[in-house]
Image (cartoon, rainbow, N blue to C red):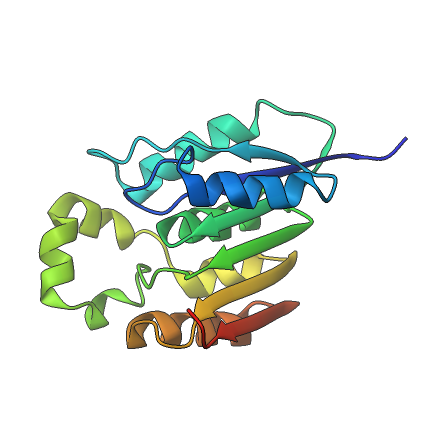
Length: 173
């Protein structure tokens, strides 16, 4: 009997896991033998740490499984941090947001305003360099070649610092 393979799909802010693109992603992986679990995120009034706790509650619902993570944008950040804690088989990080402690000095002021003080202070708790050392799983980083310069800098650094990672830059995105 094969292992029970579970793929957690974590959407980006402000999206809901039930929206069409995430359903299509779920269908793709389901056709390849994985059980997709769409993770609902209560984005309103939540910090990154709060969203991470929310994901961990989903994660603990299932035992005896081989875990795969798929995250988009801030969902990729959550998947990245979680992958250092739960040791999945594979993490797929799409458009990994540059929202770590190391990124904050480079964040545009309009972003800082948008994020708000409480969330900004919470981001200071999450060091990319520290977390990257704990990521042991195979990691695929996906990003559009035309994305924001900050984001491209983050994914390229992620490729360098995460062992066993692959970066795919798509010129069509």
